[in-house]
Image (tube, rainbow, N blue to C red; front, side, top):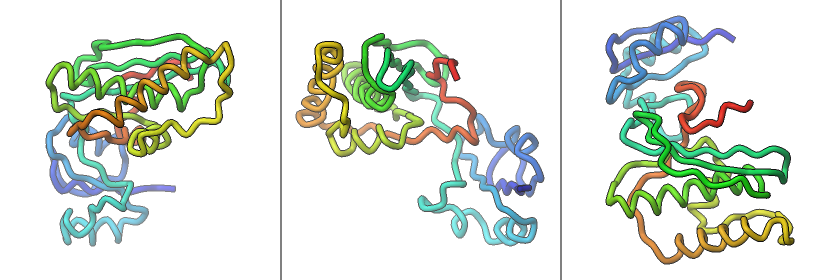
Length: 198
């Protein structure tokens, strides 16, 4: 399905008929405001009515540019469950800030542990950066302060279970102001912490 892209704020504003054209005016531009529409008529109406009328939190197709001074986290898992590892990188430079694993677990657990590890790391560094994750499930678990996993607790998974309990305890006993944000893969490409194994 063809889409039309409206840019209200960016290096160039207007209506563009492809993402390849649109992205050069919004990616890396602080405060960029843009959104995709399924018809040219909708796009024209939206462009004239402005971003406030068209950009709400409920509208998932709208996104501002990502914050470069932030942490991106990701996990990789071979099998489910299987050998899992996770890491966090500085979004702007790609520098790896932490890496844990491999150990037996699941991808969702790895994503959850990565976010909590990132929160703890930022608190130690006294940084109020946001954290990006591409896992809706992990973000939900962190906000609920509990990893809602069905992974069996056996000898092979004991290490990951100890990390889960430690992460849940940290969430219960620490307050943080860092935003945990969804990485918009469709607009920005693979998350910066991606292990590149897809």
